[in-house]
Image (cartoon, rainbow, N blue to C red; front, side, top):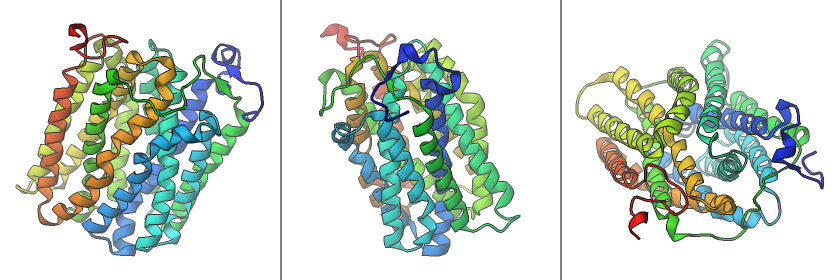
Length: 408
């Protein structure tokens, strides 16, 4: 049992049935989280416009509040003094599920901010320790391929959630209350099952449980900062644009998400092989170049009459490029001390969310006057990320963290 006093080492876990091994738990957790988050993402824009009369200002504030727990992810280090990472990951999933299930019960600005904050604590604390567990439970050689498969599993769960929405939303005249409730409840129940079905796994390297900042990780920190700033523009405003400018309803927006994740199921494992073969530097350069082009395309939508199909194509391409982001995880795994993974994951998540807390609310006001300027800013951020990616060496490792390391 998860709370047993004795732990199962990764070597001992190899003798367990496949469905009870560490990788199986990673896959299960990768499936549980998106059921809630994907449903929330698919419904929230229509829900806040229909039930709470949100404009760009309110959605900006909602998304800023959603990112506060990410900014405070460094608090995971304190929580890890009280519980192990595996326990924290599953507890956070339960919180995410319960808060998601209750979202539609409070269709007011204050109510949505409160439920969003609670679900976000679950989401961000889970993501922080989940990333740490992925790197601790996976060897460097197999990490790109396994992380690619984890992305594919996560995409499959999202695909299931979106597919069910597309097939049933209009046909059965579903309510927001019912769908949020089923999605959140499913996540919580899967977390409880995982707590009961899997042993407590013990990684070979005990993790440091204090605030940790190392100078030699500076490039990783910088890339995380830019990723957080850039991604918020996509998460907050790309889908909102589909609803506000092109009038996408729940079924149309969910169908678009469905295409995204169906593509990811096929592409993500291939991307894992690409990263393993060509290295993190080239993979991230491709990602950031593609994202810059996509954001410029978003900006052009407000200058030219390009239509919803062009916008939908950009959205799918956007999502595929973001799927390559796990190359940043494997870059860190290669340069890190094994004991640094958990505390650095918490610090990196906080760094990732520094800009994310302020940007959505601030850009919500810019959005009201000039939406294209928001996307042009994101294109510039992708360009900065590309310049940083050029500093990654072909074969990163401890002592060779950047192209400048050999000169120091």
